[in-house]
Length: 219
Ligand code: ATP
Image 1 (cartoon, rainbow, N blue to C red):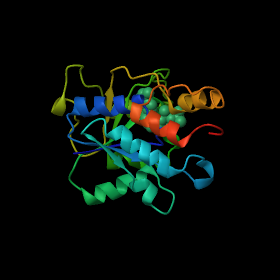
Image 2 (cartoon, rainbow, N blue to C red; image 1 turned 180 degrees about the horizontal axis):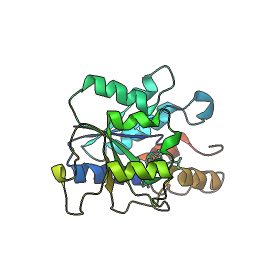
Image 3 (cartoon, helix red, strand yellow; image 1 turned 90 degrees about the vertical axis):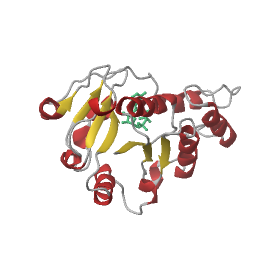
Image 4 (spheres, helix red, strand yellow; image 1 turned 30 degrees about the vertical axis):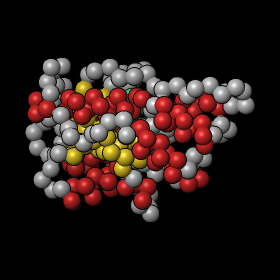
């Protein structure tokens, strides 16, 4: 059983950690790997090293969380599908879960080779405040055929679909109304003035941001 949760984590925030903890609780996973996605260097004013350090600090909050830098180690552009192909090669007979928020599900068809994802893994979709399940007809059909909503009391194997890939597990618990972009915006808007504590990140991540003066000018 392998659970991967991808994101830019710029920075990792309590919303991400709540997602990871909820998925680990519901599916009873001993481990969930938070996979840092690479961004082209010219689009990355906050160097990937900082994002990784913050992700490690965030993951230290829960024994089940592991910060995973495999995508940033790769030399060429890294896509989710490539990560899943590699993982499937290494673990041909294990269930793989790829975790996403509702906003990511809505744009899934813009992902590189998105139609291959379900051949390689199950998707676990969590709610995201501000986003509703308004899917285009293709995704709606997919969710109708492959979707599975575990009852609220279900845990462990009752939440896990059969097989090693191919289903969409829809978890219905509410998530936190937090986003990395609003955290960055808050920090930009108070740069130059008296330093405010950073909201919505763990104390260790807040200290890291303050110490390295991140997100003060541009994105
Ligand atoms: P940004 O605001 O910069 O777009 P973000 O807060 O959405 O960042 P990402 O690292 O892009 O963070 O998100 C990684 C994954 O986590 C995505 O699948 C996203 O849908 C999901 N996610 C992020 N924040 C939440 C949240 N508060 N609740 C539920 N899912 C979330």
